[in-house]
Structure formats: structure tokens, C-alpha cells
Length: 149
Image 1 (cartoon, rainbow, N blue to C red):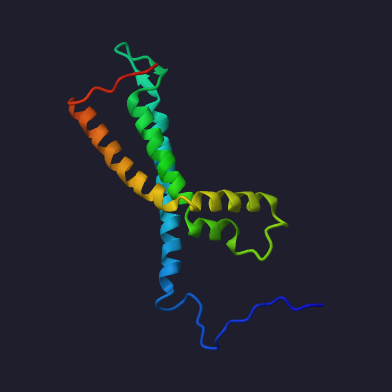
Image 2: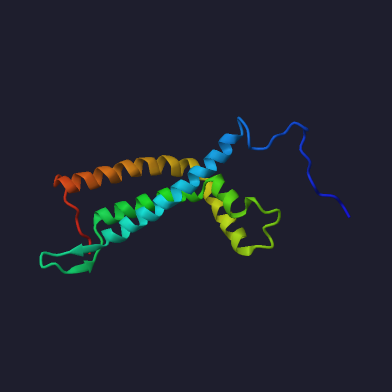
């Protein structure tokens, strides 16, 4: 049998436990902190789809603010799930992804999003700022959130 193990190029390699490679692990921990915020934003989007009329009845609807929150969530999710740290989380710790088709698909999706990681970073940064401004202006009564349906 052929030995396919790849050894480290130097005997002094300490892994990602010490400076400067420790920053790679810190980056992964920030991913774990970011994912719950996506869940919170999804809850905000869900709440934005329910309107209460003057009589107190709640009904489903979509306004411009709902679309702003949806685009914000989509861009932030694309940025987060396209991160190389997410690729490591879903499949990077395995030697062979072919044995795990669900993880392979998640890895492939993250890889596809990773190609646009920089564009998602900039567009989500701008969108977060606009979403905050939109919500602030609507809450102050400066802007009116048009209801589409």
C-alpha cells in the first residue's frame, strides 16, 4: 500500500496554537459568534412581515422595510457562510468528503460563496448601514415604510 500521509516540512511546526497562526483559530471563533446574530436577524425579518392595523388585527404583509431586512439578511448570510472558517466547520476537518454527501454539498456551497467573499463583505457592510438608517428614519417618522401587499 502507498502511504499518502503528508508530513510537515519542518520539525518545529507548532500548528495553529501559537503566534501568528493563532489568529486563524480566533477567526473561527468569531464565526461561531456571528451565526446567532443571523438567527436574530431572521427573527426580525419574520416580525417585519406581520402588520397590525388600527383595529388591532395582525395580518401578513410585505413592505419596503421587509425587503430591506431580507436583502440585509441574505447578504450577511452569504458573507458568513462563504467564509473559509465555515468551510472548515462543515468539511475541512475530514480527510474525505466523498463519504459524507451532505457535508460535501455544504462544503461545495460554502466554496461557491467563498469566491465572492470580498464582494459580499462590501455589499453587506453598505446594506447594514442602509438598513439601520432606514429603520431609524421610519421609527422617527421621517420616512414612511410603504406597504407593498
